[in-house]
Length: 573
Image (cartoon, rainbow, N blue to C red; front, top):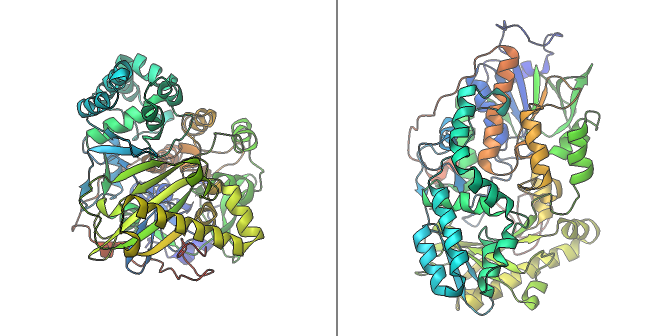
C-alpha cells in the first residue's frame, strides 16, 4: 500500500502544481487503467519517488492481457508471442524491471505458424532461415528467386538487435541517438526496402497459389497493409528466442507486474470506474468515479482507451491537429485500426496427440467462411494452447483456441437489438468449431467438454477498447506516424491541458512491449518536469512461478447474463 492511506487521496493537493527542483513531498499520480501500460506507469513512478494509485474498472489486472476460467480450464486471451524473452536487449530489461518474467520458464517454438489450404497442402514458416528456405524450395522450386530473397533478408534481420524501449524519444541523449544510428544506418537500405514493400505485393509474385496466400498469414491472419519488415523482424526475434511464450501466459504476465507494483508500495483499486477527469483552470487535478467518489493528485495518467479518454473522460475539450487527425479522420477509416477477433476456446478430454504444431491457419472455402458470423477473412486460426504453457487445462485435458478477424459492428448491432439472435450466432460459432476440429482431428468431437465464445462486443464491454480492437492503431498505417508524434513531440500530453498524460497502445501503438515502454516514457517525462531522478532497477525473483499466482479467476456460468469475460457454449456475454 502507499505510504499515505488511500483515504488521503480524497484531499486536494496544493493549489500550485509541484514544480520545485526538490519537491517537499512525494508528488501524487493517479493512473486510470490497470492494463500493462497503467501498471508499468505505476511501477516506474514508484521507483522514481512518486506515490501512485491505479483505478481499474474490472476485477482483474491486464486489460486485454488477461484470461478467464471455466470448469478448471484457463482460457488465455492475449499473448501469442512476447518480444523480449531473451536476455541482452532493452525489451528484456523492461520486463525484468517490471517483474513480468520473474521465476518463469519460457516456451520457444521452432516455427512461427503453419498455413493449410482447403486441399490439405501446408507450408510451415520455420524461424530458422536455412530450414525455412529448404522447406519452401521443396514446396515450390519455381519460386526459388523469391524464396531466396525472403530468407536472405531474414538472415540479415537475425543479425540486427534494435529494441529502443528504455528512453523516451524526446529525452534520448546524443550517445543514445548515436547508438541507434549505428544499428540503423548499415541496414538502412534493408529497412527502407522491406518497410516499403507491402506483403501483399511480395506474396502476389509467387507462382505457387498456396505460397501466395500463406505468406499473408504468417501472423496467423492477414493484418492487411503490413510490409515485409515486421514479419522478418518478429521471425528473427523468434529465431533468437526473443519472442517466446512466458509461463502463466497473459494473465500470468499481468499478475507478475501487479505483484511488482504492489511490492513497490503502489495501490490498485478494482471495480473503480472513472467517469471523468476533474479539471480546474485547464489543469487536471483528479478524477471522479461513477459512484461519485473523487480522488485528487498532482498528475493524472490515462492508460485506457484513447477515444474514451479524450471524448468521455475529458468531454472532447482538449484536442489539436494530431488528436483530430487520429480521432476525427482516421479512427473510422478503413485499415487504420487492428481488427477485432472472435475467440472460441475448446476444452478437450485427453491429450492432443503427437502433433507438435502449436499454431495453424486454415484457409477456408467460401462455404465454410460463410458459416462464421461476421468473418472478415476466409481463414480460421487454431492454436493448441496446452502446448504453450502448463496449467491451462486440468490434468489429462487440453485447451484449443480458435480465432478469426471479425466485424465489431455486426456483433454490436446484434447484442443491442436482438440478444437472442446474438446468443444464437455465438452458438453457431461453437458448432462450427466443433465440426471443423472433428474434420481435421477425427474423434475429437466426442472428447470436447465445452466451447467458450467471446465476441468483439465482449472485448469492448470488458476492456473499453474502441470497436473491440485489442491492438488499437495498426502499425505501418498513417495513424502510426501520427501516434509516434504524440510520444516524441507532444510528450504524451494533450494540447492545452496541464498535469495530464496518456500512456498505452493509443499513443505507443499495439504490442505489449510497446505498451510497457510507454509507462517508462511517461514517468521519464514527469521526472524531467518535476526535477526528480528517474530510477529503475530489475526485480529479483523470490520463487518459481506457479499457477496459484494467477489468483482468483472469474468462473463463468453457461447461462447468459452472468459476470465474466467470455461466454459458455457460444452463449452469454
